[in-house]
Image (cartoon, rainbow, N blue to C red; front, side):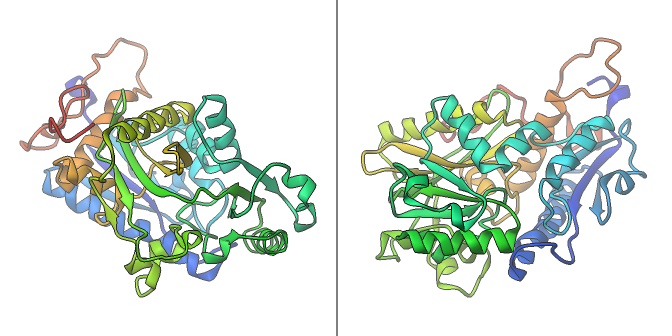
Length: 378
């Protein structure tokens, strides 16, 4: 960017939730985790010599950003909305774009598509990306053998528009029509949305982190389910992600880099890249998939703007590739600066990455297209 376009600083936008309008009471833990992530990123950027401001959304993003004009600030977007309301993460991205901010991560269109699990699976299927068969139910009375058709049991039942494993516990995997009806009834009543019933793929589970333009695949990660004897208990449940004193949390370690046959690893990477394109991801994302017995990687979720906390999966993969936490934050910012020129488009601009020297004399960001820790990023 030209010198007169250098931002004054980085506004780290995040939601500050005190209560939920739907869902289970313990879901508040997942909503509030973003606060810790925002503070960690602020510390990392400060360590890199970048001026960063913590901007908590307590009402609406427009009000929160009033002191940080788009002509002077770039947004590190961690916004997920307030109170667990549906699709507020999408509205925040639309608002940022309309207000002229350059911001990290995916745009609203990709966020909307990835958040609605059924529509995301339709997009994956159209793009030829393997994804488990599914049905969508809005009421338990709709759950019949005729409605299931060729969808086999066991199946896993999820809220259609939640993330962070909200609404997913051991009882989410159902073995009978009656169990399915009960789970659908619970989700419709508790989360106030339709339930996605998905074929359960009993196999290994991988997390694939990607970033950049074009996207680069970071080292593969695998969830270790070896502590669970019953294959139907091998899921990344809400407890496994958030309840630190639970068996699931302490017995689902993640191995990165994953130990996987090179040919199978290539299939996994290929499926992740096709999923990225099918959803329209930008900046950074994580693709979760299950490997069938015949080594077909089935995409179960595409996570635009995944958790960037120091103990979360995306940084785990970046660290394995040789990045420190500040390096990861700077690179994500650099990608955002390169891919978005959302104001002052009346004249041509040179497409350069954000340099941390724009703020201080600290090191520059990793340019897009340059080798990234050669030999570690597939």
